[in-house]
Length: 296
Image 1 (tube, rainbow, N blue to C red):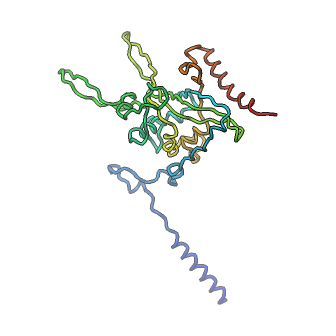
Image 2 (cartoon, rainbow, N blue to C red; image 1 turned 135 degrees about the vertical axis):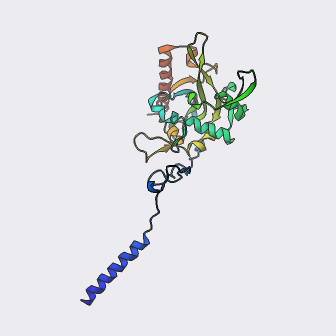
Image 3 (cartoon, rainbow, N blue to C red; image 1 turned 90 degrees about the horizontal axis):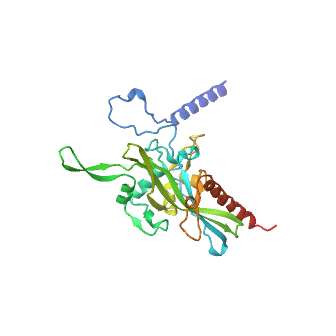
């Protein structure tokens, strides 16, 4: 009898100690929040704090020896953000819920001075750097001089229209590495293409495509690795922009390949359906070349 009473007391005491050791952080309660409180909610929007992508570091490229490269080809391709597969690269047009678009990530990095922008007029050789002020103007921002109704001149500041960037021109190099016996690819640079609307004399709208500036992709990778991309299937398993680009999870078509003229895009020597077939032919040659490098 005494042993049973002693055992019950010990069980009760251990339960009390365990209950006191468990502490819970008081969460935000809508009953304690005033509708007229000007303070912004700074808590966690969800049951846990997202730290995986924010603290993630990009994996450096593996060193490639020139002696191991048996064959290489430079390719330029266009990524159309209006395609369904590429929508995670375009949205959101404004930062929301900790997410930014690919263009917003590039713009913010250049604005802070952490990423260099290069003149698109120098093609893609990354030879001439341009300041952020020029980048802002190329994207529709900066200040302009206008006159009011009284004829007074005044400066009007406008924000960069990042939503008008609806395509990206990507420069990449494909090569066959004999050390690993495989075809590999690496992105070298990215150039945003702005689709700006212009009003004609007859009142109709005409859209003009223009190259803005180039960024060197290896310098861009640290910023892409810290920004998550929307996952249409699972909000808890989002990846970074760097993962998306490395895994080639985007839709694109070949715009140009290295040639003896070094300046010809596909649309300059063919058009319409023939241009599409030419792009597919170049794409197929890359995989045929990898197959031909093998010996059986």
